[in-house]
Image (cartoon, rainbow, N blue to C red):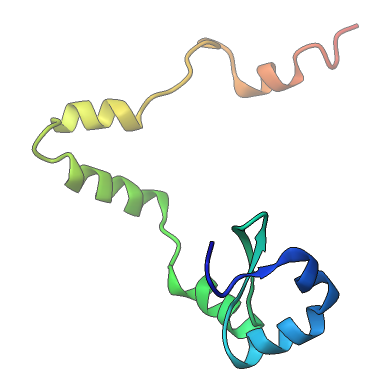
Length: 105
């Protein structure tokens, strides 16, 4: 358990105090049965966490994957991984699949 964690019942009973502590001193960890299970953050700390890690696009993730496996997979093998499609409805359109049975009389 984190030595600075407070028991959940205490956090519940003194929430305003611990909210203030989170705003002025930093995160307040909460424990249940001697295990840290939560944290109270100020809104500023929360927003910093959200902004700290930029979101990747699927193209960036694919490029990163290609770099990681550059020596182990060929371009054709990588293309097969990213071009994996469900062909179980081959020969039908997506509209036929979606509306199947809806307008049948």
